[in-house]
Amino acid sequence: MSSDVDVIKAHYAASDRGDLPGMLAPLAVDVAWTEMDGFPYAGTYIGPDAVRDNVFGRLAGEWDDYTANVEEVVGAGNGIVLGIGVYTGTYRATGRSMTARFVHVWRLTDGKVHRFEQFTDTAHVVAAMA
Image (cartoon, rainbow, N blue to C red; front, side, top):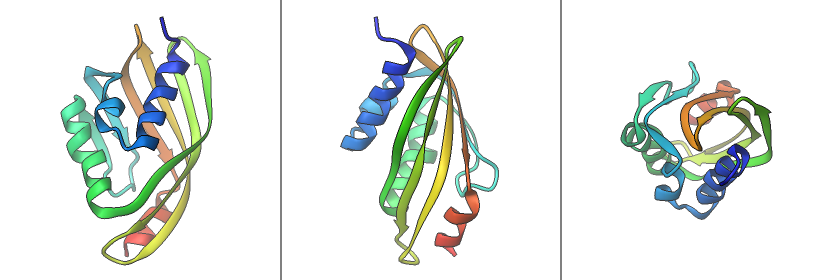
């Protein structure tokens, strides 16, 4: 059985490969995925389809080379895993690029993600879009 850290590392590896089904695989059917207030796609999305459509689909459709460069994945115990890194990308409509630090907080039960919360410097992302 994979550890919670392994589950999240597999999600990030799928992201690096551009493997959307692999990215969605660890999400529970009722996952609550929260993008930070101030982020262009802010809100809480329930279920993998909502995450796909409102987060990953929009990022793929609006950004070139949007990447979550993960520097560290840390198990905090009790099903909590932290992903720490840097977002980079270029917003197609403006041609402006950005770099923004992030922390992702993942909450898992029985190897499935039930909650995700993003923390990032939204100002850098929004500035690239303006």
